[in-house]
Length: 55
Image (cartoon, rainbow, N blue to C red; front, side, top):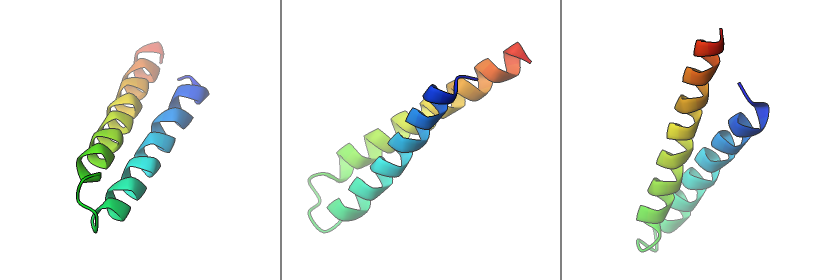
C-alpha cells in the first residue's frame, strides 16, 4: 500500500466530514462534503485491495 495514497484517502474523508458538518447549516455544500467523503472512502478501499493483492 502506498502511504501517500492512504494519507490522501484519510485526508479526503476528514475534509469531507468537516465540510458536510459545517455545511449542515448552509445546506448547499452538504452534497459536496458527502461526495468528498465518499471519494476518500473509495480511495481508501482501493488502497486496501491493492495492499491485499500484493500481500
